[in-house]
Every structure is written in structure tokens, then in C-alpha cells.
Length: 207
Image (tube, rainbow, N blue to C red; front, side, top):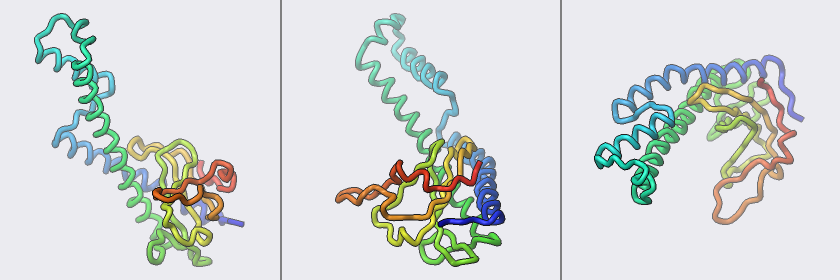
């Protein structure tokens, strides 16, 4: 059964929180960079009506109602909207990847945890156990692993849930890996998900 000392618990939560704090600066830098390339940091309503106004302006059409009912016009607006939303999604994934790097750098230089061997993110000092860091852009526990992942039964998963691009950390969980906790391997798929019936096996250490 998984047991954490108070020092280990504190080190893990503090390391992840510090990683999220690092992103406040990194996120601002990324925004400045992407805006210089071509990124309008607008809320959805402003973005939509900006696209709409620009398209109507190009057409010089005063009959806005008729134009809005035109399927081709609507598809042009939808295409531009999808492109803008995809760029925002890309920002979220970019920030998430940066979050993993920041958090690793804090946790791998700790007193109770250090850099793991091989592909393992972390090693617990007191017993040499293998730990793997996972992030989920969600409010609640989610855990996805590669289907090719080996040594699940010897791995402890450290999972943080939240939205780094918004600096929102909703939960941190620790789970002793068991192969049966995850969806079965399937040909043609590369991912396995933690089955909902095993969510209670995870220990929530934050908040």
C-alpha cells in the first residue's frame, strides 16, 4: 500500500505549485511572441464579431440578415473561427508541455525525490521506487498512458490536474500502478486510460 511521509507530500505539492508559478512569466512571454507572429488575444465574442464585421466590410453588403443566411458566407466565418480556436488550443498544449518541464526541474532536485533512471521522471530516495509524472488538462482525475508502457506494476504515477495556461491547479494525485487499473490493450490504439472504477485507488494530496 502506498504511503507518503509528510515531507514527501509537501515536496511533491510544492514542486508542482512552483512549476505552475513559473508559467505566469513563461505564459506572458509566449503571448508576446505569438501576438507578434499573428495572434489576437480576444475573448470569443469580440473575436467572432470582429471576423463577422471584417467579412461584411469586404463585401460592402448592407443586407446583413440576408448575408448571414447565406451558407457559403456562414462557412467562411466558421472556417475562420475554427482556425482562431485551433490556435488557442495550440497555446494550451504548448503551455502544458512547458509545465511538465518546469515541474520536473523542481521535483528532480528535491530532498525526497530525485531524477529517475532511464525514461522514469522521478525516483523516491528512501526506497528507489520509480515514479512517473503525468499532467491532465481537466478539473478532475484523469490518467492516460502509452499502450507500450512497460513496468506499470512497478511504477507510481504522480498526476496533476488543471489548466496551466490559466494557472489553475485543481488537484494532485498519487497512484500505485496496476495493469488491471487501465483499459485493455487494443490493436491499433496507442493509449490506455485509467478506469473510473479505480479512481478511488488514487490518493489525493492537493488540495
